[in-house]
Length: 597
Image (cartoon, rainbow, N blue to C red; front, side, top):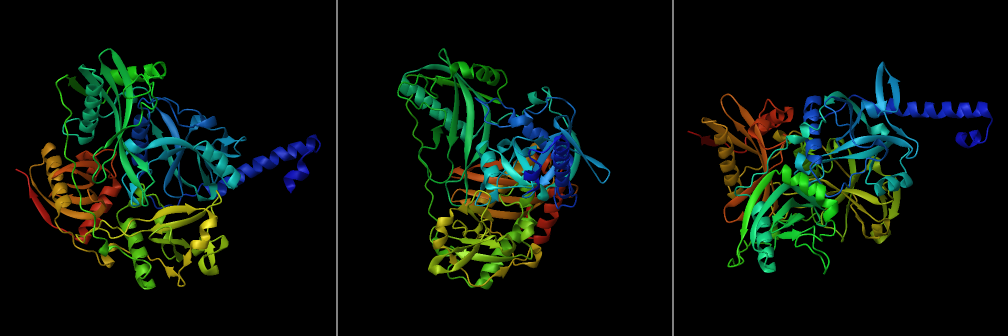
């Protein structure tokens, strides 16, 4: 109302109008820059992670899909001063000092901000390191992370959210931002030359791509010597499955026989898949000139191809001969899980449901899932919350929302009035907990982690409201009943990998391995963490393990470090390593001795 009265006023009124907007802008920040927060990473650890993600994020790409908007690209300098903020869900927002267009004074501190008149909000860079998960279990690494642009505003509405989503931008509420501190980072060109190599020896994903390339060239009669220059190997999210799913992605340059092609492949690794490799880059057209791309973008990709071939992260030499026959590899068959052990929330007593919810939240909190980049990074906020629960036919599992999130009432099944939360996009939004059908009683978590789901409001008529409400209680896992872990194939593979990691580092002493997390993600996938404890050192090691053939495994490092090196797993390297080592020791789920001589 006040804004409308000011429009069309005299020059004095215009001055008042300007002062009004300056006052409004300043008023965002008393709510915005709070300093009390629970977050397990120090400023130094965030700095290292941000630099490493920036390094990987500047790996050559065919075309940039990032949207930085008015902020533009990050300054490529060796000493960039940043202010860091934490948004709801443990999302890291940051802004270089040189990008600020407004300085805000509050409580003796100066805050940098970039205010966009066009977007009507504050723009920040966003460290996206929470994007890959399976069954709600975070399987993130810097290789799968990126840096994007986002906006913070205290006037979130459907129009703003929609406008930002079209530009690939997340929107955060300024009232939910916490100030973390200042760091100085190196974003120089010199730093970009230090990318870690991709291990090509006994790498099933690389082997699958090489095999696919060889088969394709043989079928085309393109014989000769080829070089494959690897650019990136990482996991990407695929949410078409109920609990979330990830696949592997490799991009490379294939050079030989007078031609060069940039190619990108998806490698599926869940269960029994005969044809695991899918050429994402093409060819897509009947008259395509390329074997692994449409080739129409040769000029566009020329600079990209040159960058990759000059600084590859891995290189394979391939000899394609006429007499070669396509190698047919027998696919591994996996037994479907026994669904008799699957949890049925439809018939479960409310008290048991409450225990399952509280256990999942306690488990997540105990093992630092928020810091690992869980899709729901706000699980600690559920503590003490009363929640209302729903079941329905569209999805198995349990839907729930805290009562203090409710902002609408919709008609559910049987004309029952259902309290729901409608988000800024106009969808019903719920938290979800599912049964884990792949848990076999060997000590694995028997549910998923908590995920977020949204649905159109028209589907509310299928919601089956649970009459009783429950209260979530987050406790130390030592206070709850924690199943012991049986030594199955995944545990044995994990122990063997730990031995190799220690041996490579010359650690020829005795260690005790105590298992912490254990979640089965699929018939051939598991996520396991452990405290590896010696007399003078200790490590927290976390892997997503993929079985790709009988007794052959690939290990994706998904811990608190920036890579899977033993140094990054050390208790002295990251505070969350030390925390989770101590918590795992308290559980005493296993006591496996390994002697290295």
